[in-house]
Image (cartoon, rainbow, N blue to C red):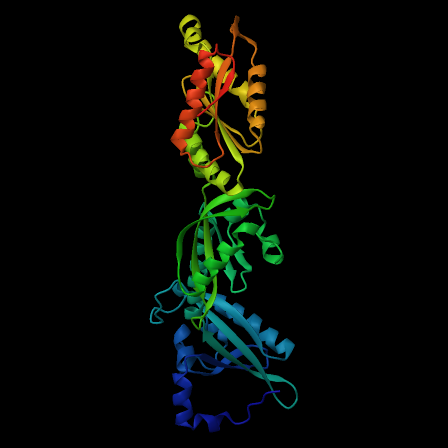
Length: 438
């Protein structure tokens, strides 16, 4: 219960009124008349200035001194406080155009927070209402500005095509954008609530550990190729960038990752690599691929002490086929020959086209020279009469074989020996294989 017994004493203290009028809050002391109407008995200067009130406004019913819209709101809130018999707080917006011109704001709206406290006498009758009105305009404007910035950020965050996410110092997900959900196929709710979910392949975890250590040192990773796992288990190639995040004390508190999908670029790069190392007609490895593989296998043969063999082979009388039947038929014969011979080889054997109808085969990990002879015989037996565009063509091949088992030869010498053995096979009537003899 609140009671005012001697208002005159308060009025005699000039210091009180000086402080009272210098308050930034608006203070209204309203009397509840016997007919339940309301009239002001005390207002500080900011309260008077709000609606342009003067001392002559005191004692008059407030509906006579206030704009109708303001009066209706105030009357409703006053009666609510009286009925509840306790202070009430409410917020209101006021258009500047409804206020006197001398009440100057450079805004369209002002925001008030009003606290209305009912004051009762000893009989429990509400005699006065004390209203304290606080201007929240600056606070609300700041809140709205923060919201505008946040909304703008979220619009950008969810509009970019790149997958983005933030994580905390424990490396747990904090937020993900729409592109992350689309590209990684993990719903935000699921990945934020289940800490067991990981998009990091097992063989990439050490790489991520190095990235985290750099972020902790304040470094930014601008461009780093990574592979990540989608919700359905697919691996996607990304170009990633990472930036550290700090807390209000300047301590490392996590980071933000941006993933640019480079799957198509990687496919294109792999296609270019394939074209650079493979023959476009037969799809077999080309001279460059074979040369690189031969160097690797020769080095490995020295370590394992296993024999390595090279086959040099071509299609017997291929020039005659090209000259009599045309290059289109010749191309079909080359493709068919490559496919037929490749099917006779072991899984790790490499067959390459060196150019024209010249082919070469690399056979690593041989325990005995007879292994190479068996493969050569399989090749000779696999070839038979072919039907190409209505033509019956008899295909045979000549094969020259050289072995790398004393581990003294270089790449060129080994291939030259196989080529010399091929020449011997031609001299012996074609459709046979010969092993190089020193």
